[in-house]
Length: 115
Length: 115
Image 1 (cartoon, one colour):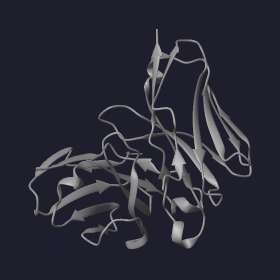
Image 2: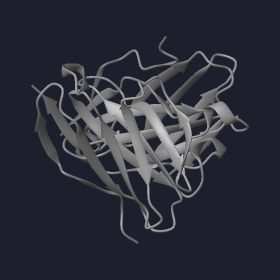
Image 3: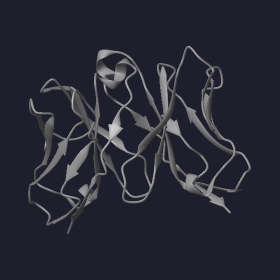
C-alpha cells in the first residue's frame, strides 16, 4: 500500500526553465508534507515543507503547492540550475500517537537539469 | 552546530550474522528515527526513539532493535541478517517527534550488503 506516490521516476529540464515535481497521497490524515533532495552517497537534505493549513509555501527558487482536495502536492523550481540535478523525495506525516515520528516517503523522482 | 553523522559508511556481512549501526544526532535533538532505503525506493520508517524510549515503529520484525543514549548517539541493531536486509540505512534527528510537525535532518547513511 503506497500511501505516497511519485509517478514520474525521472524528469529532464533545460537550465533556466521551470522544474515541476509531483506527488500524490492517499491518506487524508497526513497534515505535514516535506520535500527532500538527495545526491549520490549523501543522506536526504531537507528542502521545504508545508503544513496542511496552507496551500503554498515559498523559499527562494523553491515553491511547494498543496491541493488537499486532490491529495496532490508539487514542487516548483524556478529557475532550474544544473546543481539541482538530484533525486527528489516527497514525504508526509500525520499527527497522533501511532504516527509519531513516521515519515512516509514516495519513491523519488530523478531530476536532471541540462546546461 | 554539527550535523548528523553515521558509522560505518559501508559494511559487508553474511546471512545470519548480527550488525550494529551507529548514529550521532545534532546537539539538542532529542529524537532519532531510523529508515531503510532499498535500491530505487524511498526510505521506509523502521522506528523512532525519543528521550531514550521507543516512540513509534514501522512494519519491521523484532530482530530490528535500537538504543538511544543521553549523549545524542544511537544504535540500530539487526539480528539474524537476511539477504533482503541489504540496503542504505539512514538515521534522522529532530528536536521533537516529527509527528508534531518537526523537520527531520538525515545523516549520510550506512550501506549494508548481506551476502
